[in-house]
Image (spheres, rainbow, N blue to C red):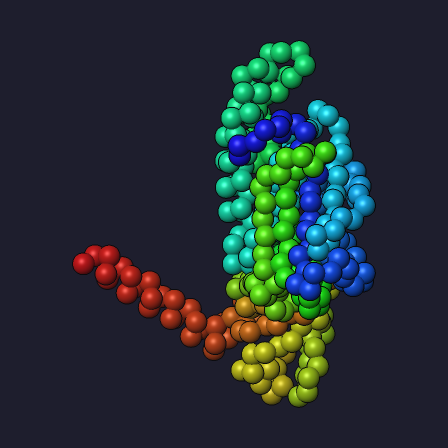
Length: 325
């Protein structure tokens, strides 16, 4: 990160919307949508890095459309604030296929290996500096692990989805600069033809799987139809779909009877989606297989549970056989 100014002066992010028609205007609703999502990314990062900041916007400039966000905070946090601006710039321009963990680790190494940062560490005994760079890096690294990757992905997706609505937008670039905007570094850009690489195609997330889920049955479904069962899972009342046709048949024919306190051990899927605000919401529960049901706390193995257990045992024997060979 070669530069002609001090990293302690880093406090401004320049956002440049490049237009293909030579104009200096774009749809105000689209512009405001983009800025709102960008502010949301800053809010998430600053919250998880535990560094309070205020963000101001400066008057727009021409050359397409330019906007500047000025980030202010306590002077004692200036190094982390500078890192925050670098991080925000990089995560905004990270495709969906690249993990947040990779980006943060790479940037941590680059940022704290910067010659000026290293020099600050050497001079920490000076009264006006007092920086222990190793401790600051370790703390920042630990806090980075708490950043919600799903929330960042969603807000970044919203940002580029909004930008994609502006048909005359050629590309977007972001540049870290000083308060006077004299020196520009760490410029990132993405062309409009590549916006789709940053946009989530679905709000549905991979479901959580619990192959040994214990559910106390509150209300079973005893007749055919698309009715949902009710049970207690980890202390919470849930409604779930019984997708094991074999177990449903046992219940509907009376081969399995439920009474107060009856439970099942099963393979449970917890389906989730992400809201427009980046929050994860459970959308439903599916029981795929039932291994055991309980009568007076005594487990009774189901036919499908028995087949699954026997297959696992056979697989283990096969592994042992190859291991011995």
